[in-house]
Figure (cartoon, rainbow, N blue to C red):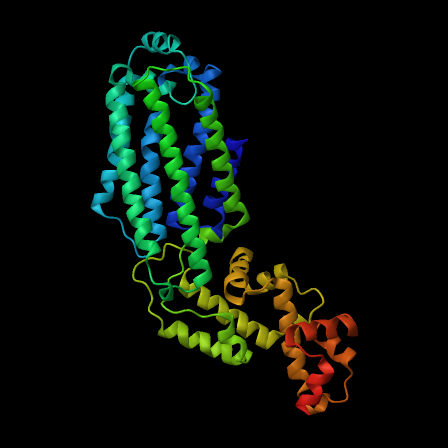
Amino acid sequence: MVFTLGVVVSLFILCAKSYTSRANKFLAYFILIMSWFQIQPILYTAGLHLAHPSIYGFDIAFVLLLPAMVIFYFKIVTDEKYTWQKTDLFYLIPTVFQFINWCNYAIKDEKLKYEFVRNIAISRDYASTKAILSNNIGVYFAVLIVWLAISLWVTYRILGKFLSENLNKHWDREHYQTMQLWLKGFYALYLVMSLTFVFNYSRQVIFQDYHGGFILTALPWIRNVLLVIFMIRIILFPEVLFGVPTYKYIKTHSDLDNRTLEDNHQFIIKENIDSEKPSGVNNLELSDALVAEYLNLIFKYVNEKHPQCLDDFSIESFCRSLNIPKSHFHYLLKYHFKETFVEYRSRLRIELACQTMQLPENKILTLEAIGQMVGFTSRYTFIRAFKKVKGIPPSEFIANVQ
């Protein structure tokens, strides 16, 4: 189940156009590797290592690749302008050396390899380490400890720098805080995973315990639960896949409340032109410039076409008309407009109704007629929505206007 969920989530991240970014690719690889380790003991116990002795131990290269995936993810997701450095090759050295080590094992005689793995007492999680490294397992254990410690330290420094950033430099304070919580949770998950790896190998190397006990049996289940929670978090709240917003100012809903739709449109255009664009290629598909472009498009379309008046005005039809991914519009609703689509639709209709009621030629229209003009099906729903948005009934609003 964990492996299947991991594959689904990874493909979702890699294939969904709305979430395409360099950082998300490393996140998907991390999930794939962790998911493989949850099914790997079952495959080995079922005899995979005996049927294909050459592949036994290849998974250790992925153990050493995990820290690099985490470091690259944190580097890129916290800095949209991040470009590859020569020093980044350092993080791939452990994986390369292990791959060379495995190649040396793989070219051995098939009968020798078969006898080698057949005599190993298969235990969950760490049997492959003994198989591939044999007498060098102590060296591998030391390398693993040092490598995990380095990766945790590097990731901690990246996270600490991000958490200390000024809130005012980001497009949306709420989404920035969401990303802070997300990255802290990701780091905590990686820390727990690292500690379980160290615990498993220390029992094998130091205590020569290959059968374990209750704790060793429980560790894979603990990892499974944490990994499932991690993946469900992504599925239920995919806004974390949009990365970190990087505008150097904050626009809240209240900034736009006292402006007309046309004023909003011109305001966003001006801010988009005046804002500093990050140099290089954006690594996030929902970049700050794209958010401003979406807002321009939405304000202009609503102001000119009045789609809220249609009976079938839905989020699907709206996004289709604007050619905006539905997931991107959900992001705008949650972090820019700060309302659900139903609330957004109702507000648009009420704003249009207010404009309609202020025109002298519409004084003869009944409330029911005005409500139907802007998309409400009955007088009752129109009055109830009007009071919710404006705080007063429409009749009082008309009296104040007159």
